Structure formats: C-alpha cells, structure tokens
Image 1 (cartoon, one colour):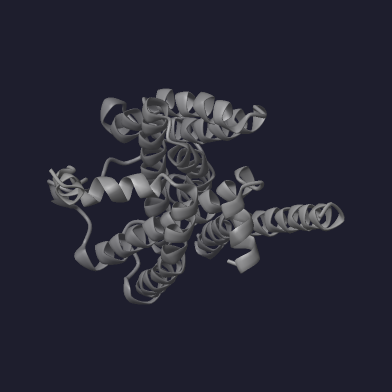
Image 2: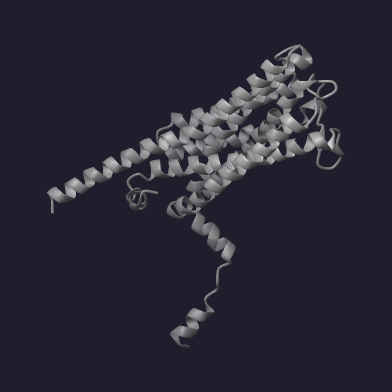
Length: 51
Length: 261
C-alpha cells in the first residue's frame, strides 16, 4: 500500500487548518481597525462642526 | 513624623504582584503582549523546520508501520496541544469566574478556537494514519470518541460565547461550560488504560521513559515544543484583536490606532 496520499493528506489538512487559524484573527484585526478609524473620523468631524 | 518619613513607611508591593496587576490593564496587556508575538512565530517556524526536516529526511521508516508513521510527527504534538489548550482554557475560566478579570476571560475564550484547530488536526491526521495502519479511518473506541467529544466541547464554548450579545455575560457562561468540560481531559488521557481500545497506549512517558527509538523521539519533542509557540502566538494575537473590538470606543484603543500599531 502506498502511504504517500495519507501522509500528504494529513500534512495538507494540518497546514490548511493551522494556517487558517493563524490568518483569521489578522483578517478580523483589519476589519476592527477599519471600524475604529471610521469611529475616529466621525468623532473628529463632530468636534470640528461643534467647536 | 514628617511627610517624607510617612511615605517611606508605606508597605512596598511585591514586584511580581505589581506586574500581574499591570497586566490586568488592557492597554498595558496589548502593548506588552505585542512584543512577544513575532518572537513566538519565529521560534515556531524555526523549530517546525528542524522537526520536519528530521521527520522526513533523517528518521528511517518504522519497521511495522512503514512510511505512514511520519504522520505521527503532526498527530501526536497536535493531540498533546489539544489537551493543553483545553487545560489552559479551563484554568483561565476558573480564574475568570472567581476573580472576574476581563483579560483572563478573553484569554479563555481565545483559547477555544486554537484548541479546536488542534483537535481537528489530531482527528484528521489520526484518521489518515489509521487507514493504512489499522485498516480503517475511524472506530468508536474510547480514545477517538473522547477526542471527538473534546472537539464538541470546544465548539460548544465558541458557540455559547458567540450566542450572547453582552461579552462579559457570554464569557462567564462559556467559562462555566469550559470548566465543566475539563472532566473530559482525564478521560482522554486514561481512556487507553481504562478501556480496551484499538488506539495504542502511551509510547512516551515523563517518568517511565520512552518505548520509541531516540532518533525518532527527538523530532517529535521538537515539534511538540514548536506547537506551544504557535499556541502562544495565536492566543495573544486573538486576545489583542478581541480587546480592540471590545474597547473600540476607549481612548487607549484610539491612541493605538492613531499610532498605527
């Protein structure tokens, strides 16, 4: 029995799952920082319009 | 007594206690933990490269299992890490429930997805190792089933945390579930002793030595240290993002975003 597909499959799944688990928080961070920047802009604008 | 003498007589706090108090501040935790993350990733990558090189190019094939035993360099460290991540989550959950420290609540909740990822890897790699070795991808034996229950516990904690809108209430409920689920850890560990399982018993023991050859053992130990750094880096990254998300309207978060960190 050729074991290569089993080894490749196991390591392939391992890499995909662990890579996704590592990248997911970075994608989330980008969107959170975008939201915070928008919030800062809104607050800055309201300060400018009501000096 | 002069003011100067009075201030001299104030009891000085233990530096360790002071440091732990400081870590409880979200702003301090965010900045402090950020310094470790790149180092943790670097150590993880270096150790993984060493372990994988040895596992694929140095270590010979097993005389019984053949080439498929190389899957164990992923399966075993992932399995150990899935248990350790749950242990950390349960410890954090206990501290969070007793002392109500928000950062520890966040650490407990951020442990769950990392632990779940390791459990998925354990089950998938174990299944792919089982087919050429046992002749089947899956059997409902005690070790495999209790590891699957561990995955469901992780998913339960993640699901419960995300189902409640108020983050602190959500964390308390999920911490309670995490703590109750810790009963599964000794069941997983001792399942191969308590029941007659297809899954073999421990090959490596801290006290009783190892039944596998040293040349095969070292890459396994290196890989198991590497995944600890992966866990640390991933946990801290997730915790920092969660802090930013929860404290979005607070001044320290706005300062950090303005600084571009």
